[in-house]
Image 1 (spheres, rainbow, N blue to C red):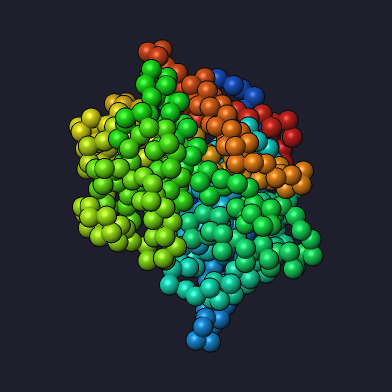
Image 2: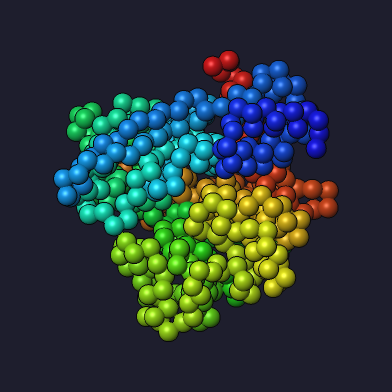
Length: 445
């Protein structure tokens, strides 16, 4: 490793001890943009990397609420407003017991580059709480969301910070959060995305991350003269991302053969399509967080406690959570003939798995592959600002074009002399340039 690069990363580790997810994300970006950075004295003089890895603001607060038994509960709330150089902070809220500052800093850092790649005017942010909605009643979730918003409302706004949903935050939670925001501010604005259709939400927003991931995979294959038609795909997860990916992959002629949950994964060799995709919505709404009922309903194999990466497929798309596909998984996939791995979840692969896949096959990083969700959030912001409501076809066409443009950016900055595209490098440099130029133009702020 370059001595200056090593010294830089040593300094980052010293300032952020124990924040493994954040350090992993920073290392991936810094290593891939370093040569480009060192070739541009303007960036070095302005200390762009030093500034870019520090969030502009971190907000942490307590969230007291009362459960159905009348007991007082206390959770911790966060909002990491990472970078506003190209637009208001934009990024989801995550409600899950695993939520901590390291994870949210990693997600906000990644979001900055992802949002930049969309070419829409959105900065990077992320937030959430260690509250877990699983097993909670609607009234408990409402009381928690209202308490959470009683602090968060003072830090967000349509031109300041526009949150969205994420793990544990779906349409129900967004509705409760937005309702309390509207009451506290006495204004009806586009401050949240992922809203219900009745009050300003965009068509195809729930499916958008999955749709966008498949559009990006289609472009990766097209660059090699191939198409999705006839390809077999392993998906992990069974939430909105996997649901959207299954719909669009099937529509474009591929066959999705796995889904997974914390309990294990199902293998359906006939393909997950039609009513089986509809059943994913029922599973997600059941709040049980398991996929075994799918195996029982459709008479397919269920592998308890395992991940789907042991199956023979053409394409693997992690759709659940960070670091869910490791180096051993990647080796199994490659040995079984897999030709492409694409992260529909944020940092779905470990660094070792991503590096191996980049060398041996084709690898699409999350900040490019899963940008479709935030892209449609940006389109929702536009519709809210203009007081317009675009059709499903209009939104889908705009999403498709955004994903094509992101792929072209990755190729522009990531194509190597051999002709192969290093998508990690391409996405990181492509996202970095726009933010860096905006930061320089705005001075030392």
